Structure formats: C-alpha cells, structure tokens
Image 1 (cartoon, rainbow, N blue to C red):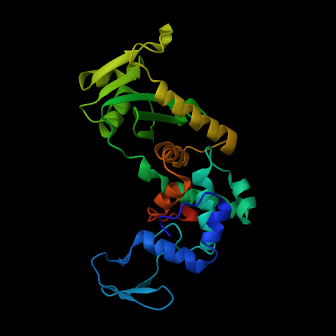
Image 2: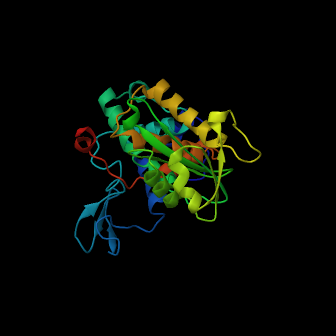
Length: 287
C-alpha cells in the first residue's frame, strides 16, 4: 500500500474505503511490523485484538493513533486522510471553510484538523543549509512588528523559514548560524541587520536600494520568490493569521516548497509518517 501512487482524491478514497484499511496503512508507515509503545519505547509490546496493543512496562493499552495527531479524535481516519491529501496537494493550501465542505465536517472541526496537521509540517523546516545560501527577512500581514519572518534557502536545495521577534543584527545572526553551515557562501540584501554575519560567513550583498537586483551570482531572487508564494497563500486563502499561529502557516508553505519535486502520494505518506505530534483544542485557542 505504501508504494501505491494515488493521483486523485477519488483514488485515495478507493484505496482507503474504511477505518480498517486506514489503520493498516498507518501501522505499516509508523511501525512496519516492529510495534513500539508510545509510553515506553524500550518496552515489549503485546498484540491484542482489534488493532490494540499493550505496553508490558506500563501495562497501558494503545493503538496506532495514540500519541499522534489522530489521538482522541472522533473524526474517522478516512476523513483525516482526505484532509491531509487536500492540504498537501493544494499549491496554496485550503481554508477551513472549504475543507469543511469537502469532507463534510463543521468549520470548527476543519480548523482544528488543519491546525493539527500544520503542527506536523515542521519536519521539513529544520535543514542544515550549505553551499550557496540566500537569506532575507519579511513580514506577513498585520503590524510590521508582530509578523517578522526570516528565510534561508540553499540554491537547488531546501529552505528554512522562522518567525522572529525583530530584524536586529543579533536576532538575524543567531537564526542564520542555527540554520546555515559556516562553510556556506551567504547572499543577502544590504539591510544593516546582516552586518554581523559578514564576520562569520563568506558574505556578499546585493544593493536593492540602488536598483541592483542581480550582480552575477549574487542575488536573493530565490528566497523572494518563496515570500511571494507564502504571502499569496496567506492573503488569498487564509486572509489572516495571528502571531501565535504564524509559524504553523510558515511551516506549511516550507513543507510544500521542500517537497515540490515529490509526487502527491509521496508527500501524503511523508506527512503520515511524521504525525507523532498531538495538539489540543484548548492549547490552540488559549492566548
């Protein structure tokens, strides 16, 4: 089942017509025959009936959904699979209102499902970048001071983007060091916040304020292209995002960018393989 290439939502539904087929697919992706207790990864696991398992060391029962984004949800797995397929295959994302219509749930449930899914997108936003790397900062909607994001992209490679509190030199330098190897050649614009990285990296600047957008290999067009995708998606599909949830939306677009050369079925299975992040509704709405 893992290698099956689903090319449409109809093929997905055909492949997973009921809860049983969804559970088997999750078990294959998550455990591949080697069952692991979410309560004690070193424990022996006993297989019980109806896809239930018991952890020997804690005597607790669990199933493949325990400790994942599917934990403690009344929504059937087929609808979860449909939601994951839709949000990973849409180039600009999908709104909770549209998802609610597509899978026949309430808008409140669809929003909660999307936020749980977004919590797993961060698996593609923690790459070690090297070689030629472009870095740039921007802000997404709302007041400038509340929506800062810094992005770094390795040409012909992966991209990382992080929400930050400000664009001061100390903040930008810290994020770049966390994400970019010291052996990389770094290209930025002339913003003073990048003055600190010149002492650390092979750092070249493109002078945008003087109308210089490309100087040989020196440019930031790749990361600026990503900002366009991010902003069009948030403004056109989501319209608004709070400061609290901004990183989740950024993670979504980073995931989509970094998996752009994968098939839709591959992206779907990649996310399903990394769902061990549980988000509560209370945690989402508080603050």
